Length: 206
Image 1 (cartoon, rainbow, N blue to C red):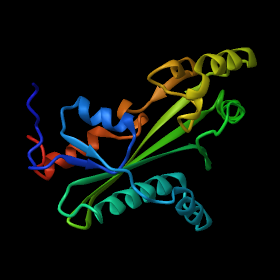
Image 2: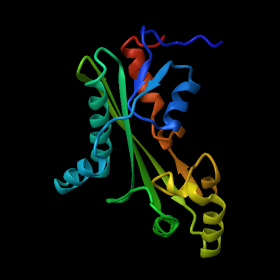
Image 3: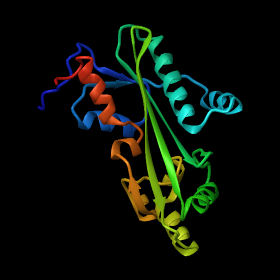
């Protein structure tokens, strides 16, 4: 069994039920538990956008809301909240609710560079101790309609499971010309800045 570098007595608590984020932490041998946050993401987002918040600020606010919600039920734990927004300039995208919605997303994104903004917030002892947003820039090929239909048929319902209608670690890589950014940032949990904080806080071996 791989020895963990984690130094706290209790596992890290991830304020998310995302299997992708959980796997990222498990793959680096951190002991982790998960707990979903009870927050109205769309309501928070709508209020922020009315106040002029950009997609970076929205991602950070949602990660913060999730972390603090879970912290209220788990005193004394190290908690990480995370969220990600996809933006084409100032235009923010959400998960498509249908194949037609995914088709529209990909028609808007093809031939252009969009951004994935991944935010993390750490809470301990009822206070925020770390917050960070990391961004990646992804350029889609200017693919034709025939390829788009072939991709949608091959991907099936998986296109409704992510905000950009793709999983870059799978079939979605066929959509792209260029990807600039750390892989964990693209998957929604920027590990490098998170681990740097953990080392500074004495939570992992340095």
